[in-house]
Image 1 (cartoon, helix red, strand yellow):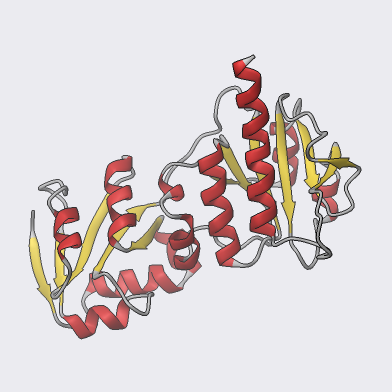
Image 2: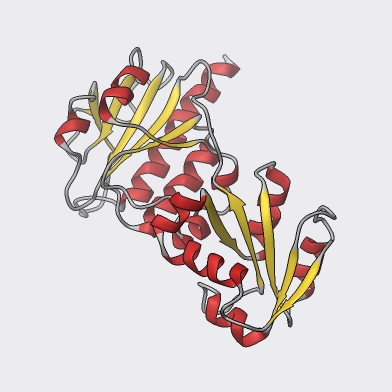
Length: 263
C-alpha cells in the first residue's frame, strides 16, 4: 500500500477528485467518479470495479482503518491534511475517506425481463434513492433517458448506497432503447393509470417507466408505453414522490415474481 501526505490544493490527485465531484464533463472525460464515505468505498473495493486511488483525511475514525485494511497493496492511498480534505469533501461531516473509481462498463444483461427506465428525473436524491431500490428489488438494468440527472454525481452516488457498483446503469438513445425493449411490456407509473398496480401482471417480461414529478414523461418515452399503472391511495394526496412510487412498484414486481416461484 503506497502512501503520500498531501498538503497542497494544487496536488494532481486533489484537483482531479475535486473535478470529479463537481463536473459531469470531468467524469465523462476521465471515465471515473468519486465515492465518499467508508461504506461506499468498501462497497466499491468489494465490487470488482477498478479503484484508482483513495484519499484519506489525516484524522479519521477507526471505521476508515477497517476499510483500509481491505485495500490491495497496489492501490495508492494518499493521506490528505485535514483542512484540505474538508475543503474537498462533498458532505458536511465527512468520514474522512474518498475513493476514485472507474465508471463501470456495463453490458446489456442476457434475457432481459426486468428493467427500469427513468425519464427526466432531475432530482439527484430521488435518482439515487430509486437506483438503490432498483438494485434491492432485483432489476437487471436501469436505463437513463435525456434530461435525467447525472447518475454519478456525488449526491446520487451517496443516495444510491452502493447500487452504482452492482447495478448496470446505461444511457441509450430512444431508437436503440425501443429495440432493446422489444418484447417487454412497458408500464408507465401514472396517478391516473388505467390499471391498479395490484391488478397488473408483472410476472411477464416488463419494464417500469418512471417520469418527472413535475413534467411526467416525454413524448419519446410515451411512444414506448404498453400500459399505465397507478398506485391505489387511501389518503387525499394527489401523487407520491417519484422515488417512493418507483420503490412501491419495483417491489410489487418482485412480490409477484416471488409468489409465482413458490406456487
